[in-house]
Amino acid sequence: MAKTKLDRAGGGALETGRASGSASRRAFIGVFGGPLVFWQGLFFVAPLIFMFVMTFWAVRNYQLSADFTLANWQAILAADYAWDAYLRSALGAGLAAGIATVVAFPCAYYLGLKTTPRVRILGACLIMAPFFTSFLVRTYTWRTMLGDEGVLNAMLGWLGLGPFQMINNLFGSVVGYLTLVMPLVLLLQLFSISGIDRRLIEAAHNLGCNPFQTVFRVIIPGARNGIVLAATFAFVLSFGDLISPQVLGGSNPPTLSILIVDQVRGGLQWPRASVIAVMMVVTLGVLVSLAMAFVYGGSTKRAKRA
Image (cartoon, rainbow, N blue to C red; front, top):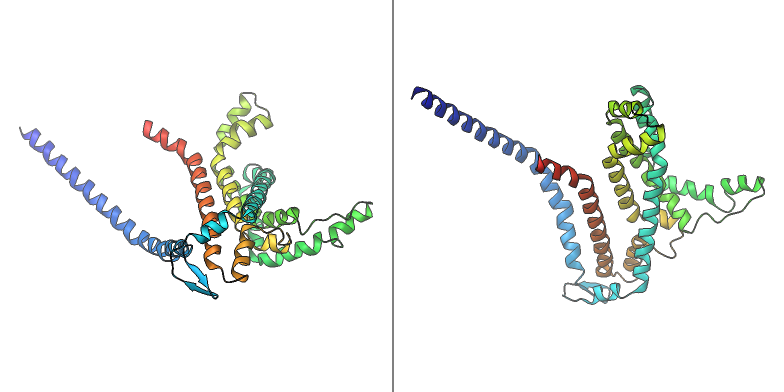
């Protein structure tokens, strides 16, 4: 009897402790998460809602009118130039994401697994160095280097090649996209590869895997999350970039970001520009959701099974 009462008392104390710990966690989340929720709601959710509402407004005599009309959606969705710009934006962003992922991997692999921690930190600092200068300045620098009489064509001319048209086209836009996203892709891949358990690599070598088999069977699966997230963010940044297609791509034919500017400049068509912006947000939202599901979906299922 005494033991039963003692067990009940202990169980009650345990339940009280759990309730107190749960309340403390909720208070902690509320204190430190509240400002973030407020910030996101005020500067992201609210403008997004307003932008969506604006898609139903009308422009009369260059003045916005808070009406409800589907004319803006019909005008944009039925326009071939809008879908051409959409596909062009997706193509350029996809190329930039794919190229950046492939080109960055050897550098991230070497820094993450083949160097000392001091060299790795130095490499990470050098990767972040481009962020210390304006992206617009870096883009205009590429324009002087890639022009018909630029440095690169001059060097190719010494070899009897060229000149090649490297700006005012898709190639120039992709170069600008890579200038924007390459440091971020490198950093995300570096952090992911650095976290791989070295014992797995040693085990692969002991089992007879050559370096290429180790990369494809151990390192890439182990760094999958970082690689996928890096490619996703590269696509997101490139898809919405305005400077690269404008300065290096020639603005014609336009991408979606340039199309937004044209709609506003051409007659203050803020509602139609908002329609294009909503198309971009929905596209990127779907892409990011799929990437998150691919990265974390498997681990969530395994956790539930366990």
